Length: 237
Image 1 (cartoon, rainbow, N blue to C red):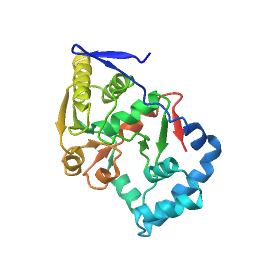
Image 2: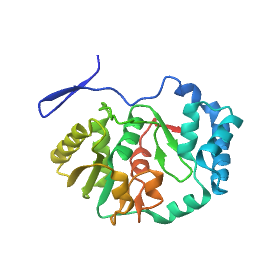
Image 3: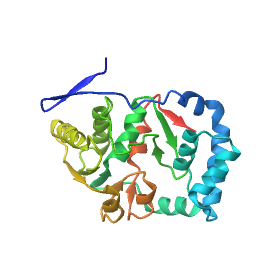
């Protein structure tokens, strides 16, 4: 039976953000070599101005990658210019943080659930989750939020969540409950488009979203900092 959780009187059936049934084969140890080569080839093409879709098709066909593997290559690759620029704006410390909520939290959830965590070329940890307008409340959500809070060590955080995505209201409630129970200075805001706000945010932001990383003034590699010390994480490649 699926676990349940109560949020202010409402009981929810929870699932896990674990691996896809095909992931042990698609992202097993014997796949590391070809996958790493595909990421390098695709990054080379991006560095030379190739269109993202055309470049990914070319590389995916060359290495006979499945659609899921191609998505993973796309999340790991970046041009050399993007890699250098992101390294320049990465922050090692901060006083307060604006967090791309779904982006950061789902990577920690996936790590806790035994899902694949991708080590990208720009140094970010990324997961394989895809929302399509729906965020699934999972058993790992609360532990993931607690791990983030422990890493922040009491520093203020402002979480931005996608209002159009279902269940973000419940996630907002969970985050506030976790913060209240630990005495953490968190605020949560449901907005139509967190990406648009974070791209121009004057404060340090926490995200691995490439579009935000390429525009923001400064970013903190929160998901990696939280996940890296954990044991048993399925890190690939």
